Image (cartoon, rainbow, N blue to C red; front, side, top):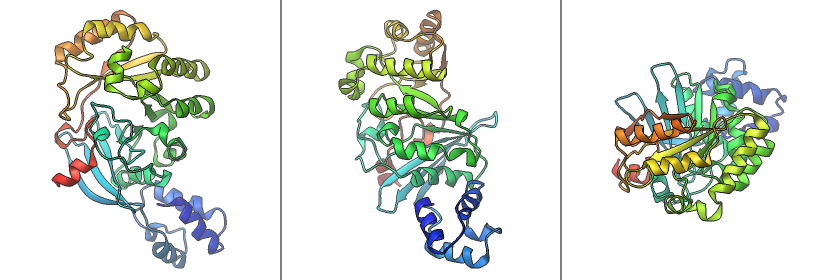
Length: 331
């Protein structure tokens, strides 16, 4: 829902100031239409239905994986594609993977999103409407800004949307923003964000040369500077930084690469999440034994590490696989 349009419409109708939050509360709880908002007078409900679209996004396709993961392809009002994912876990977690941009301009070589045409930043309402789409389906309790785009290239909208997620049942401590290390947005996050929103760093190689080949952002913002900012985040907020590391066979998965990674991370500050590579056509994924060996190298150095459970791979909904243009052309 376009929240700015909602506020203007209510103001133009002379509604009291509390009416906007009242409507938002209904929306955040999963209402699917204005007609369900029984604390609003019927004439107001009818007027809002006529003047304020219930979503800023239109659903194009929706697919469900064998493991229960759901991926939805949306388009914005001006035709830009956006994908978001609902991940269901046996322990009751219902986690959303949200996009902050249509496409991504940073062109990481292992990521399908980086290969598609960049559209634009999404508004806070367009980000929230991804979450609200799934909230109308079922209760949700976790969110990660790890979908399409670099969140810190769109930090105003990302932070505005993240601050509204508790209304949907997703607390700040269960919200994670992932960055490749875009320093202006990262510095702002470290300096200004008091809420306990979690920070994740998309790293993927500790050797600067290898990282530059995988992630062109290394040339602009070197890893050493990014890690220094992450340490400052820990010092100020006393919250660990989660490091995301995609395992690519023969590229970044050797024991030597593990030792290189361990050398730049401090125990107690960083926690590593090893991600099995999900096919996008560019690389081969590391074997299970290589991932386990890499994990042992980190653990011997005192760096806690886990291996991410892959969700939604059979519908191209797993980490690094979101690429709306490919979906549109094959649907």
